[in-house]
Length: 117
Image: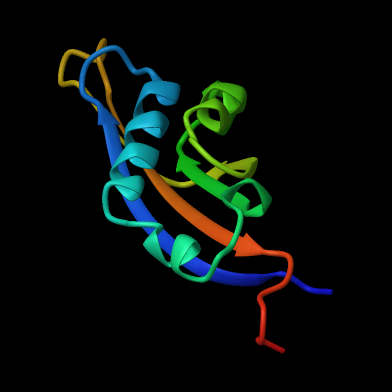
């Protein structure tokens, strides 16, 4: 049976000094999580351990994001992380210290919802 998306939250995060893409990604995920409450999961009697959490991170240098660290930051569910080109790098006028901005989309799906076709 196909899964049903029940939540989609978006967030942004940055690393203003140091050019750390993973730090910016973690902050973007934290921002997305702070915009949501998963009270509907308990209200529907669903088990949070069965939710499928799909995280998409957009940054200018996807290869520099530690997807394992991002996945470990999610408190519930079966997490997958995909890192794609996106976000924004803001150059330092001296060329040494770019500001890194990441975007995050966190989608929560359930394999089957009671009473939902």
